[in-house]
Length: 190
Image 1 (cartoon, helix red, strand yellow):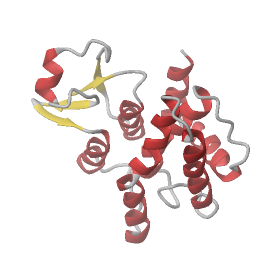
Image 2 (tube, rainbow, N blue to C red; image 1 turned 180 degrees about the horizontal axis):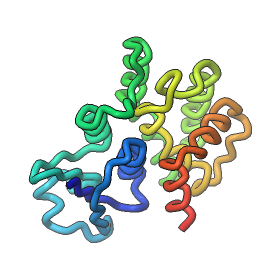
Image 3 (tube, rainbow, N blue to C red; image 1 turned 120 degrees about the vertical axis):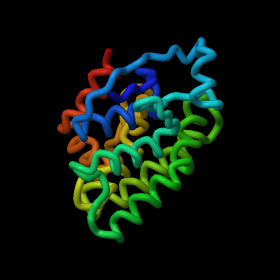
């Protein structure tokens, strides 16, 4: 059985919860209080961060790596496209995720110019989505999962309206119809 060391408000954990739900993998969640991180968490992940996945005593931190592991360990349904070009483009997006997250967190901290930098990143995603329906290509997958938690939080918690990015807003609407993402929306609303 899989155990997920989790924090409900953490977007990195949301990535893993979405991947688990997409694959219909049962797991035992263990909620971690991020304001008072337990010492045992540092034994599992020296950085003291969640998510951490444990399966049969084997421990794996880092959301992007966990998502890749889940996709390989439980191959159905696949969360990367069969086409190598689409798969490479999606992996490149995940690899460059810091370009997106740095202005997001700067905005949360209230840094000058952060909103403009973050809106540029939203515009970049919008332009990508003017072609294929998903960041992962023709089907929903790990590139979409990598960005969704932050776009949802930007809209629902930071009050960033997505009207000026119609392709991005349509992508979020499509994704929100998926049970895995709908569950995250309910969690954000609670």
